[in-house]
Amino acid sequence: MGVEPASQGQPGLSHERARDPLWLWWEYADVGSPFGSPELWRHDDLIGVSRVFNEELALAAYECGAFPMPAQPGLMGWYSPLERAILPLDGMRVSRSLGKSIRRYQIRIDTAFDDVLDGCADRRRPSGWINRDIRRVYRRLYKRGMVHTVEAWTPTGELAGGLYGVSIAGLFAGESMFYRPAIGRDASKVALVALVNLLRDAGPEGRLLDVQWLTPHLESLGATALPREEYLRLLSVAFQLPGPDWSSGSAGRP
Image (cartoon, rainbow, N blue to C red):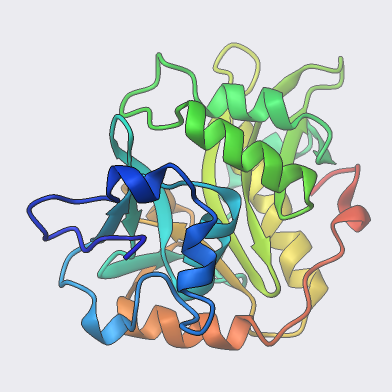
């Protein structure tokens, strides 16, 4: 198999298979998911590992409810949390101070992908996970129009913060967000407010904003956690919806 169950003693692909990632798509042409049926996934957030990592496998993961995160050098982990965090589009909490911060920034869409990725990958941040492979694959997905950035800019034209994620039909899978402390108080939160507004305005109901794991920070903004099975059910609904018009939010305030 292209993606090995994480519970196996020797995870990942054989050397022979890893040399040619394209074999994966022929082997799974009639299967639909390189991870198999969710009923067979291990009872753990980590459902598999692979040495192959490219944009097609990443998209296949999102479509079946998983996402990539490096497990160790040369090995990509594939995660589908048992408790999956989402941010309901009608549940975003905007505090009074955040409301004031919103007025300080201009929102732009898809104008500074590399800068946003650099901000999210800053090595001074704890638990950094954006490595060279992640950069390579998500840059390609950005060029294909599958990855988008929401950016908060100061009036003087400095990037203060932002976020990026994967957009497929009615799903937006948030990957990471950042802000620059010296100039960007609440900038990442402002970008998140703008994203919620963009997705909500796209209608109809059923869109899904995935934020992976619930943290105190995300919970304070209105995020909640769902069992994996419920998330997969909502995901199937979201995939029936058209994608939002990303060009509609190219500038302005959230």
